[in-house]
Length: 492
Image (tube, rainbow, N blue to C red; front, side, top):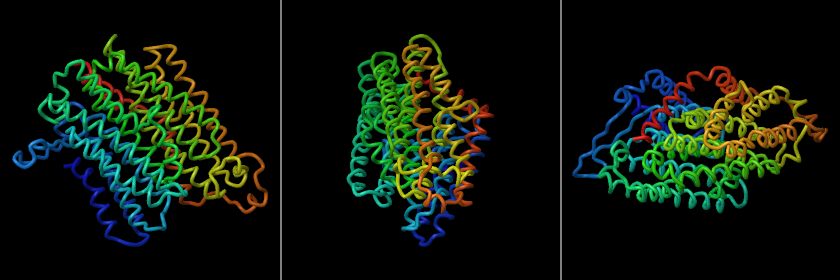
């Protein structure tokens, strides 16, 4: 019943907000999301990796009505717990980060609707249900970006985003239907046990890879990302970068690796790894030369997720060809949560800067550190977390990811490791241009430190960054369980 409550509470809250009007919508949405977080912490506390029935909800549908959906499973394993935790930690921060004065009930109802879709993806134990929720999650973010985004070309950019992601998901549907014809069921447990030929696995690999590579995105399927992140409202950018792109990582771990292990072990896996590493360097170099703060964060996000994908494929290739290698998948598991927190913090800080200076152009900012020292400290902690400085949340994950790649290829690890140097370059550039320098003296003379509300929000983000960095053991335990679970499905 706990999984059912976590799944249904957001859609109930969303329906309530759609029926309401007024500014209290934000506080209702925040209350719903905080209850979600408490339920998730309780579920994590009670979760036992060896007792999946204790954490699983089984819904039965009459076979005569929906034959393909006769056994629909919602449940959580270690990977599912991790993703539900990621979602339900970030959504309250995203809701709290700002009040949308234009149609607030619709705005926050859409956020909760998207949370429902995301939880549905992360708890689905049925392939067709996974696809349905994958599409459900696209609907609210499309409306959020289209209705509340900024810029003259926002509708054109939003249409491109929708077509890209919807078209990509059709590849996944083709792969799932093909696997269903072989296994006779959409149940994930039965799909994992299907006896698929090497040729079938290669076909499934590329169909799934295209769907997930677009969502992440992995080079060269990234052209929708920076424009969409830039024109989306801040909360939309947070949802896209903090949670939605993790859907692609989750899909790789949940579907692609278990369904196509022979393809992963061969040239297909190597090609995916190479594309991931190319994307790391490509996105990092573009971020270095960006002056638009939101586009800089967008390309930074692409580089970090490319490293996550490279770590996963490296571990999988080694496990299938040489023996067990948990490091890359362990790093990916913990880094998904760390990156989500960091990128939400970056967009939060960027939103404050954009509102203060009235522009996204870093060259027109500067000097705010002297007038807003508290904000400068919090922004610095978030920036250090993004750079994976020791004792911050991203350090452990990036170390394990690079170790996983190093175990497969020293050259690949060296190239992927450039992300550490380049990340330091563009992050310090972003921080330096916005916080230091002379700036406009007349403008700066009127500036004060940030108000209480954003101060509390950034403090929460900073605490999460430091606590995860200083005491990562609970998440390391969960990430080790996740890696063990994924490799057990991979090596049959």
